[in-house]
Structures are given as C-alpha cells and as structure tokens.
Amino acid sequence: MRADTMQQQQQESQSKLSQFGDTPSEEFRKQLHELADWITDFREQIGGLCVAPNDTPGAIREQLPRRAPEEGEPFEKILSDVDHIIVPGMVHWSHPMFLGYFGWTSTAPGILGEILTAPLNVNAMTWRTCPAATELETVVIDWLRQWVGLSDEFGGVIYDTASVGIMHALAVAREEAAPATRKLGLTNRDLPQLRIYTSDQAHSSAEKAAIALGLGEQNVVRTQTDGQFRIDVNALGQKIAEDRRNGFQPIAVIATVGTTSTASVDPVGDISNLCREAKIWLHIDAAYGGGFAMVPEYGWLRKGWELADSIVINPHKTVFVPLDFSVLYVRDLERLRRVFTLVPEYLRGDTVEAEKNYMDYGIQLGRRFRALKAWVIWRSLGRGGVVARLREQIRLANLLADWIRSDDRFELSAQPSMGVVCFRFTGAAAPPPRAGTAARGSADSIDPTDAINSDIVERINSSGRAYLTQTKLRGETVMRIGLGNVLTTEEHLRNGWEIVQETASKL
Ligand SMILES: Cc1ncc(COP(=O)(O)O)c(C=O)c1O
Image (tube, rainbow, N blue to C red):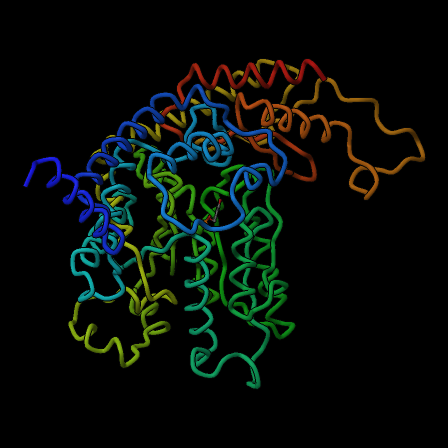
C-alpha cells in the first residue's frame, strides 16, 4: 500500500476514533503547547489590557450564538473566541492595576497547580475514592494551621468559600444549643428563638447562614462598633444578657479578623472570654485577616483564637491559593462530623476504612481535589515567600495612606489595615442642598460628597485604567483600595493614586 494512502487511512481512523473517544494524543499535545504559550503571553501582557470593560449588560451574549453547537469545533477557533470575546469582556482581577476587594491571588505556581488538577479530575468524597486527595487535604490543612499558629486541638476541612464554612460552623453551634435539630428540625418543638451576634461591620455571610439554617436573618443581631470599626464588647455583652432576659437563646458570636470594608480586627481576646463565660459558640471570621497571622509581627491577630470553637480562613484571599479555597477549622473536628455524617448504602463499600471521609464533614458529597493547588503554591513559595509578599502588601498600604495624608483634599476614612485603605475625597464638594430640600440619606437626595466619591470610582473603573471599589462607613461613601496582586508594584500603586487625584481634580 502506498505511504500517502496509508496516512490517509490512518487519519480517517483517528478522526473516527475521536468521534467516540477523546482527542488523539498528538493533537492534544499540540493544543496544550498552544495553551501554554497563550497562558504565558496572557500573564506577561496582562498589564497592557483594560482592567475592566465598559460594556453594557448583554454585550458579551450578543457576540455568542444562542444555540449550542451541533457539531464539534476546533480548539483553535474556541481559543480565538476567548481572545476576541471573553478576554475583552472581563474584569481582570489578576491585573496589576486591579485594586478592588482584597486584590487577587493569581501567581504562576497557582496556575500550574490548577492546570495539574485538571487531568486528575477525581472526586475526593471518601478516602477510598481517592486516598491521595484525602490525605493531601489533611496535610495542607495542617500546614496552614501550623503557619497561622493555631493549636492542634483544631482540625479542618476545605470548602469552596467562607460563606459555606460559616454555615457549617453555625450548624454545629445550632446542634449543640438545640440538640437533635439534625434529626428533628426546628419546628413543632418547644424551642426558644435562637440568636447569633456579630458587629455592624461583619460580612453578610452571617445572615446567609441564618437563612440557610432556618434561624432567620432577623436573628442575626448586629452590635455597634467603636471608632476603629471594632465590635463594642460591652454593648455585645449587654445585648446578649438582655436577649436572655427576654427569652431568646444566644447560640453564637461571630468575631471578625479583617472586616470586609476596612479590614478592622475585633477584640477577639475579650470576645472569647465573654463567650466562654456565657457558654456560647465563638466563630472567628478570619477569611481575610487569617493569612496575615503568618506574618510574625502580626501574631497579635490570633489573640483569643485558642478559645474559639471555629475559625474560617480564606487562602484564596491572602495565602495565594487560586479561587476557590477556604478552610474551616473546628476545635475537635468530630463535632462537625457528628452533625453531617450520613452514609447511604451505595457508598458504604467506599467508606469502610478508619481514614477520614471528607464527605462526612459537610453537605457536599462530590468534592474536587482542591488541596493539590494549595500544595503546589505553598511548596513553591514556602512560608518565607508568603510572608514576604504579605509584608509588601502592608508596606504598600501604608505608603498609600501617607500619600493620602499629604493631599489635603483627601482624608483617610479608617486606619490602613493589612492591605486595605479606605479614604474619601472632601476637597471639592458641591454646595450643600438648599434649605428645605431633602437631607442626606433620604430617598430623593444624595449627599454631594458621597456622589463625588462614587463618581470618582465609577469613572476610574469605566476608564479601564485601574479598578477600585467603594463602601459606606458611618453612612458616608468612601473609596477603598485593597492590595493583594503579586504583580502590583509601588509604581502601579503610585499610578493608581495619581489616577484618583487626576479624576478628582476634574470634578
Ligand atoms: C470578612 C469576610 N468574611 C467572609 C467573606 C465571604 O467570603 P467567600 O466569598 O469566601 O464566601 C468575605 C468576602 O469578601 C469577607 O470579606
């Protein structure tokens, strides 16, 4: 048979094969090389992209077919659409000028960890369904525990997010306050109204958890904070005592180490004493601040942790693990297992060993191999590498705060904390509303300074040059910069600050 006929037959049989099976390996290898180049170029050139698109809603959808494809399409075409439709339609969280939220955790080793996870694609629901995934999960949870200086009385579990972590923690608090809730539920039983306490700065995941657990969002009681946005422990103690007198049953307090708006840190030491005396579950939301406990001079952050019942830390915020990766630690992890273990018959064969079956520690059965990407990034950076990068974020935040202090048209709205700086432009407020017109906060008026601050953020974000966020503190709109991207240098930050100044000057 002639060589070209043979080659043609081979190609035909390969394409037939790929109709049923997978991409032939030579083609796959070529695609992967192409993808490797694409990723490296993307990472190298990300600083030249617009940080955010300025599209109207629906702009991306308009460029995409409404119907799913009938026939398969080549990877090259799909990648080209990523370039031309998806990338321009994105907010680039990994961009060095992305200064929103808490910055972002993209790094080259983190990307390698994600890529490595893809071909393995296991389901780590039980030890037996993937021993390596299960055991590596236990290992990385313990590494992080040691890094942040948490005692070995705490065991952990990896979830996608802190919101899911807090829900599980409060489910255990609920079970311990109202035994047999797991079995009987909350209704048609002689139970008092169960309540959870936190500060007016705490994350909304507290209410979300209360909704999911049938506790009711109104039973999350928010206590006032002091001048530095930390919970007022006296007010908290008084509210708990008053509620008890009125027949409510306090079941948990949530203290925050690194609040969402200002990264303020609640006085956890005092709160933990209060919880211990009142016999109430203490959950520490260290989703943001927890990672900073690795920095030796920030060891004070873990004051009171030793008396907590549960702590959530988001390495996808501050320990460089790509989204999603959150760890819930519970003192005596068996308390969590007791609430969630449930082995249906079809899984019994895969749950016989004494090793951990992580499906027992939450509502999720299927679990992806999240530990691998953490293992790759943490081995690549080491503790020293993580700490050095967190210290740089702290340095940059303080530098920005100095620049803000030296421009008298701006004021700092809170002390900079970790990588977060909140500030307000006060220099060119429009004249106050005329007498007789509505005051601040009413439905039909907006405070002019609030409007200007909001406008600055909107203009910058829609320019695509930088990205920041706004929040409200004591009723005032403020701008907020959060550092976290490893690509953000002092030069980028200086550029960002000049963009803020320049935009403000134009108003
Ligand atoms: C203090 C704090 N807690 C909890 C969360 C919720 O985190 P997640 O998105 O992982 O649910 C956030 C999110 O920013 C946060 O800032």
